[in-house]
Length: 188
Image (cartoon, rainbow, N blue to C red; front, side, top):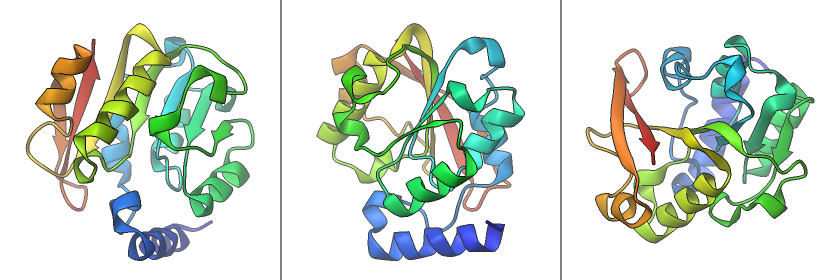
């Protein structure tokens, strides 16, 4: 599907439910390069939350992650259908990230990293807590959860970080994205 069609898919999904989608257009390749910068082929399987049309997924593959090492968690049917067509070797999980567990995964395995395109800042802290608790149950002990935000502070509320004994560190800002976005690594 061409990039213009991806933009149209995003725009339609955003108009229908802006809190679920969080952005009217897909992230840029520049942001994708930043958010996936710490992922390498030897890191193990990678789980991606809210992959949309696959901009970050494509960056992960360019970094050497094989499709069969990718778990793509997408609630939006319009996006999950696109992902299934583009990445037939990846595991597509059509589920709410806040309700994800090892039993939801067809191939249960701990992951070496998580990449998130979820609009955490638009969600209540209680849902962010459930998403991160679910994510960290699926991650290796030293794995990072990489999240971007359009804001100038951590997208994970301090209360959630404290409750889950996590820390968030900004790893960079991409000004060539529209709008500019910062990426955080959340870890134990």
